[in-house]
Length: 340
Image (tube, rainbow, N blue to C red):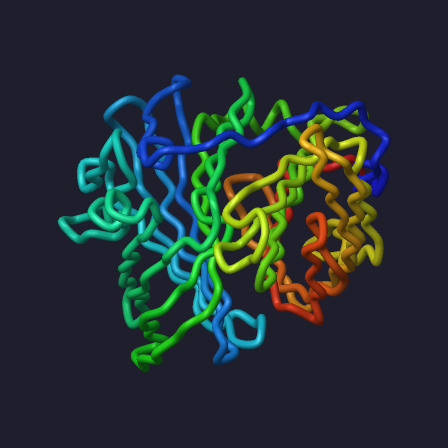
């Protein structure tokens, strides 16, 4: 793969985040003839474990398949990789709020009462596959947002969440608590694979400030680079806000390329932001991200890597500054195709 596809030499669009409602995290249904839509949850716990839970729907109108997935890691290394496939007629959902039931078992249950009372997003996530299970509560600690274009439909309902509950690993159950993330993607189709090379995505959660970033690559000279900064509920100033950063103020460098499953993939990342927004807010970030472990899988013909990484550096919004000291985070790389 040509390393230059990751370089900041493209004429990026400025993709801004917008406020969301529960409907934005609901099932969107067919936009294309054949659609792929998914809900993604991850969490890093304070007992060396971390998880990913995913529900992916492949559908052609009322026909298709739903795939459920549990990944469990210890110190970044895979200990569980469980998947289950069901026909679409076993799948129940809502077009108005986040909700998924499979084979009469509630997997994603959004707490509408809590939302209506407090304006905060809270989910119960419960999924069992064989001897492995998650039974977790995700409670958002910062404001969610969405980005929608003709090619990108992405709701980040929980840029950061407090997560607690239980995980069962090969029949053994642990109480857990930690920090999580949740997003929802829709409007993707097989044509997405032909129109794009792939993307890098990551989230960095601090105690007060957080950052979600992505680099989508349509061609060697075309793509989108985005970063959105979130203030946490417990931040002293400008709390519970998000800030979209113009890509001209973002520098993303990738290095430390390694060969994995026949592909060259980056193992180190530098992300720098220096931006003054129209409202006068001063946003800065100087972050170094280093890979600990990667997990490779295939999505049809595409190659997918989930990274466990350590993030170091700083993020600041006006006078609020956070220093990150080797925080454990999760990111991903998806390659539909490569330039060899």
